[in-house]
Length: 199
Image (cartoon, rainbow, N blue to C red; front, top):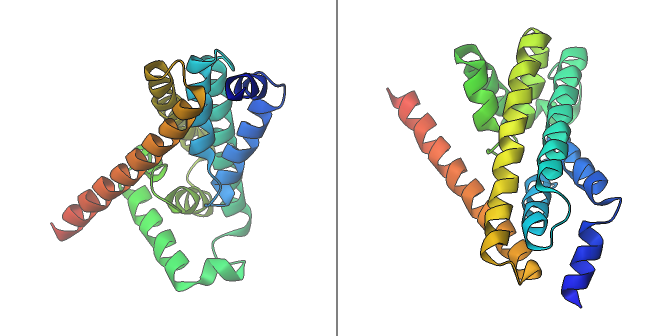
């Protein structure tokens, strides 16, 4: 019964639309679980056969890119201090961090910021506010969004392949693995940044 329900949900016409909206919202609202949606659908793509894995990757990449572009545009149009939340001490510290990192290397910070809570938003807003040329910046964002969506979907697909007869368990495990990998990447990047700052 659970498998039939998951198959029905996975093959439903709104499944990829909902995933798109979650990933898009994740660009603006840090607590929205965009990566979890991509990993879960990656697991379902393999364990129940729907939605197609390439569609999960393509829609996830498009949503991530659209979110990045939207945040870039917001930063470019309104700057970094218009709303009260932007002037908070911690937010300003994150925006300064993003500006420093963008000065050192756009591609590196765009790729790594995807795995650090709030960093993605800070980097995209700052890139727009500091007027990094849109064609160059958005090209990097497109590649980073595709790499991110592929990574998240493949994590889910790998778990789905390991648990082909247990799609619900595959979804739960893929979400847990994605979260643990995200935390691990966050910790590793934090250590790397502290070492670089100490040098």
